[in-house]
Length: 303
Image (cartoon, rainbow, N blue to C red; front, side, top):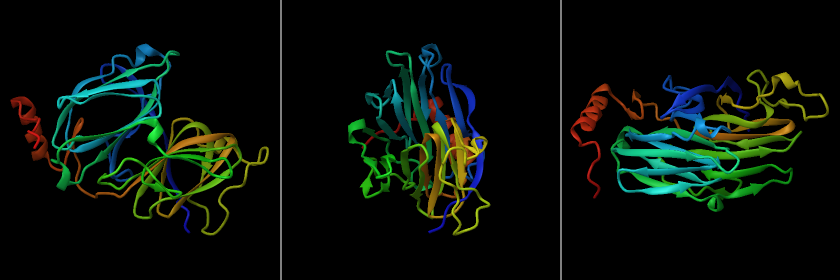
């Protein structure tokens, strides 16, 4: 077994998106080398209703998949194909935009004014850029949740983990998407496909992941005992952690425990051409998409 070293650690940046939604962006609209096949990751957590209510009105998508995971509040969604629905706490929507849709997402805070969710964009390979759009709406009750003997709790959204398989399937990147909660003081190892790029996003508590300088075969982290962990070195709220190669990651939870998303996928290693929520392989394909928007042929007939 080889522990994945930490290759980079950054903090999500505050942004305004949609019609004025306050969120934090961990990565997006830049070099995709470390995150491939993933393109963008947003944390739209907020306790001020006015900062999210304007939402994300009608906008186009082509060439990607969007993954929305809601923890608090709701997200009402609709599209140009007639799909409608509401994502509640703990639920997931995996939307394959493929050849193109017009889409809107409108957050609705809960009774305490809280809204919390994440959105991840996954790239589609060139062979599937123009595939037919589809949705996978997954209710909270349908997401497997497993608890280890040490109290670690993992929700398996997609991929296989600890003998359980997530309900989202048929995804091009063969991703792993886990919601992991590790109790205070617990040191945990979690397996990851050696062929995948992987990152963790911390959104509650704090902990320390394996460091790049740790020699192979050496115990990477001390177990938490009082003040043995240097609290200044912990990865805390809204920290993004990138990992190098290996078949597992190691995390040592701090005194309050840690909760994070662990996401991994096999890289596509294809050219990326951006135009907002339209992501193709070449500039010519982007220009065609813009022409399609202008002349009303962006939405392809469904067979």
